Image 1: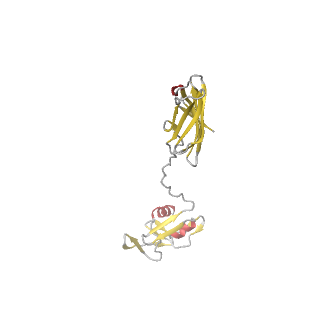
Image 2: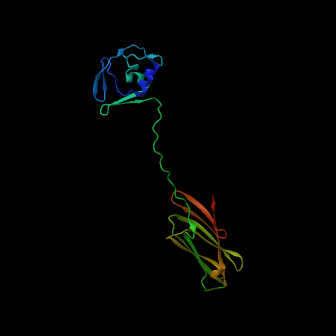
Image 3: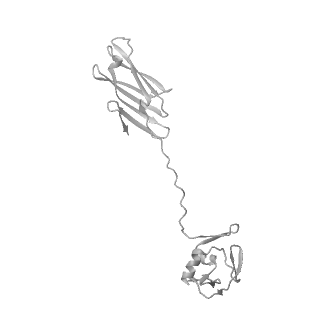
Length: 218
């Protein structure tokens, strides 16, 4: 009985069996067969299958729906395709194709790569000092705020600081006082701290000109 039942559950593809008839269907061809009805008492989880069964060629056939429902399974039948589908409880769902990982655009804008700093000292002198001018331009797709650029005056080894809260219209001009004898070549970029944002993310970076490295600040 067990062997016949397993073969039936594994390979029987009809939606219902024609109990009470001795005709079997095979490839739209009718064939008369000899079967033995109700020879076997069938239990599923100790519950009797209260439907007729028959034995043919050593295999026991039972109503598909009756057995499936005793196993708490659902049976669906598609008349158009002549398909019977058995869905077991807690059956694993077919895995969906893995989605390609979405890569997030890195939040980074570098000095010399979209951000330019051009520092110059005009030759005009007034009252013993000159005014150094720094032009900061932003050609990146990010917004840049809270810029602080530090230059080293190599004549006296003192810092010259330029600051702005934001870069407007892609370019901002800043000024800082330097000595009367300072030339453009005397000012060397030391570091630059700035905040970049794409509207949802924000990051503050400090650029070290001596090592050409970036440090992310909290």
